[in-house]
Image (cartoon, rainbow, N blue to C red):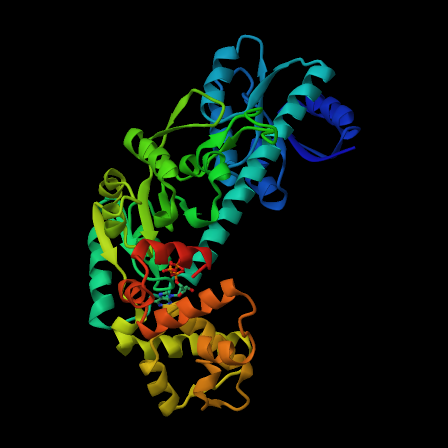
Length: 455
Ligand SMILES: Nc1ncnc2c1ncn2[C@@H]1O[C@H](COP(=O)(O)OP(=O)(O)OP(=O)(O)O)[C@@H](O)[C@H]1O
């Protein structure tokens, strides 16, 4: 027995009864109705998977107008409805017109049971696909709602962040490519999402690609997609992220980490606005708004020949520099309170407060990890603090110095180098040029080491 609900509407009682007798053996529910006027009430109580609808109900009338009317009503009641029209010989034109208006198929009266069965089974497949697509769309909407919610709070009133706000508003609708620069954890992804949310592409996808996390070997198949058989693991066709982003926004994070070879490949896509899936020669046009971000100094890298100048000019139509937390100290209390509320709620520790003297210390700390570090610090303090008022700054800023002193004394030369670089960066308030100078390295050499140590 196939778990499907079938509704048949026809004014010929004999046709109805015969169809029901036969279909009842195959489908879990078969409902018959002589009068089309009952359709609205019937559809209100049950959701049918397949509906068979006669075209003409009044004797002597065969213009199909009634059928069209009821087809329209059914599709209004359930936009995913799958309707098979019942037509007589000589009414093929009507059937074709009905399909244009949204019917799925038609059967000719008198039908052969096998033919009827095959038509209904095909219609059921379509219904299943329609339902799956609907569900996927809902899941996608729910997921993007969740993500947008998580990125909805853009806290900050300092002049530095207000300038960023103004720029976001100015560029959002322009569809121009944007390059976002700023240290780690300053909120670059938040800015990218805000631009997308305020652009005309807001109802389309926002595809995020962390270029720092994609290996050279996977780059092409991840970004360009592949066709079945292109390589051993390519068991089916797969669209790449460029294709998926079409219609929406493509956010390329950590673009400064891209090797020169991959920079050339990226540039080709941006110039042609089309991609070829690995293993295929077909060019697929892609239309996305490009937003890139990095914590690396791309302009200096161009000078040092580690980043292509033509690529930089291609991606930086508008540049937005997101200030570090040190440059917006006035926002620290606002952000701290914001995260405190969030985590107090999450860990069910209502009424928590940060002592004034602690807040002053938070404002003086230099936050090398910026807002992300502040966020994690508050989360840790909410979990570890015993009373309602957080009075110990160590709970927040146990930071690197503390960890290095006590628990994680470096064991190897490599670890020692990492700690040394971390400390120098801290002493130089995250300024790479000064740190490089202090360590007697070139900036490139320091960047290479920072990358190796994941700093
Ligand atoms: N203005 C802000 N208001 C509230 N939360 C913020 C703000 N800016 C950043 N955050 C939060 O800080 C965290 C880090 O932000 P985000 O991931 O956007 O930084 P990023 O600069 O892209 O970091 P990375 O360079 O490491 O990729 C996120 O959880 C984000 O929600």
